[in-house]
Image (cartoon, rainbow, N blue to C red; front, side, top):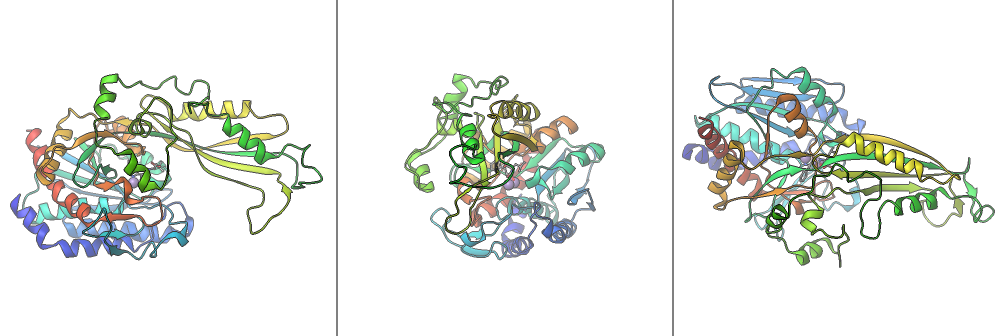
Length: 462
Ligand code: BES
Ligand code: MN
Ligand code: MN
């Protein structure tokens, strides 16, 4: 292990420069205009895996963006780790809120990252975290210290629902055989408080279109009589939660597994400062479901959030118009045992049922994903916990995450294996937001910790 860490120390600068290169390619999966850049990114990842020492690397085209697969099988009697990550990124919009261009990475110090952080789209989610695995693998190979077989599956459609990865996993089940999936695409509580994510929420995503009159109208001539789709949409949305901010869709909570009082008490022991939380976000108060703490509201409880809403006149100045149409996009985060399809259907039925006769409502389902739990009593969890102990000097705390990585539930279903979510980002790293960044401390800590995971995992599986 010493040789591996020496190799990492001797190559830090190059490891950083290579990541900066990767961050300069704008791999926005959602926007077809970036299709070639997404492909170029897959090629970069593929070349990196080859030069790191992978014996077989291939780019698999899909109906959408390509999947990069690499493997290094050293001994069929050793355990096999499948590393999953994504090289695609969220759109950088709104561009004018970035302090430096999203695809021209710069390193700046911040209060939370006194050693500097890389500001660029994808720096934390997930190029930076994915690339740590490539570099850790390189270090293990070059220092003659690789104790497991490794497979890499790096996709380009995580941020748009991983539809084609699902197809790929089914088709290449045999090639993907492994003992565990290892992912770094989540966060730690703080740089001095390591944690391991032991659960992710699922997702149901829908878009609604509300149509009133057959054309835009003068808001003085018709207003007061004709149902305004924007007003109607607001009324409908307001009725989706009650005064305790419970969701009112009938059946919404039916399948929710209530977490035991003991487990809740345990989870609320995790360090959390409500005032710091609010200060960081510039808010005076929070507004969550009654009866639950913020940590619970953002992990073990399902949610319903509007992600966007539009209609009518949104240009400069005023225009007196009663619009013909109004739109909104919603995401619902789901917890264990809830089903994405079922919740989407419940939403659709209910939303259509509460529409007043003056409008027509169409609900369009988007991609979704199932929740996942990754237990903390498995060899892979123990290996990750010991690895973090080795590099942070502290035992990591198990925490349930609020975000979603839908493919985790699928790995369990299709490949029959559990995942370990050993992420190194911070919740304050502004993923999906302007000025996304990733601490240099976090990048290097990840590269240093990963080889320990392999070592302890191989030992525990003996
Ligand atoms: N890496 C995130 C998920 C995440 C972030 C999990 C932080 C836990 C903590 C991932 O890239 C992501 O953004 N997933 C999407 C879901 C997808 C279907 C678009 C999400 O959570 O919105
Ligand atoms: Mn991610
Ligand atoms: Mn993301």
